[in-house]
Image (cartoon, rainbow, N blue to C red; front, side, top):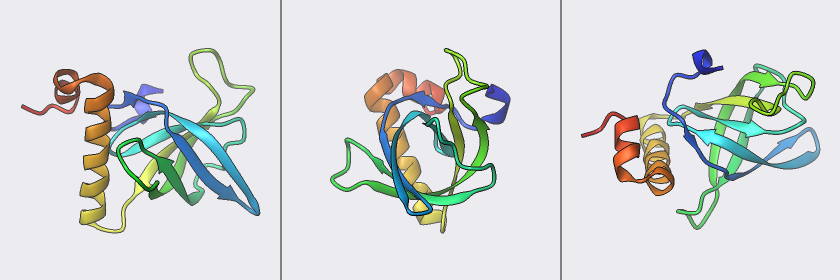
Length: 126
């Protein structure tokens, strides 16, 4: 699975909400990076599906609303204890400002969950 990832991911669990047809879903992320996230769900959307979702981030008063594309899925039948069912999401940004704002939130989350030293090493900061 690591070959599918472009950015360094931090293990983190955030509540994520999204809509499919006329049904709302509430699932959890398993990890997050500047470029995307993995949403744990037994009901993954189809690969290529573009959708809007809301992440409940402890650092923010309001959920972070993001657009993403399903890049890959792990079905319940394909899952294992190491690879839970769900979908790999690549973030889609409207512009550079939105990208920078989201990346800033992800960096703060990583620092909070992993500590400043480890998060800086993972993000290759000095």
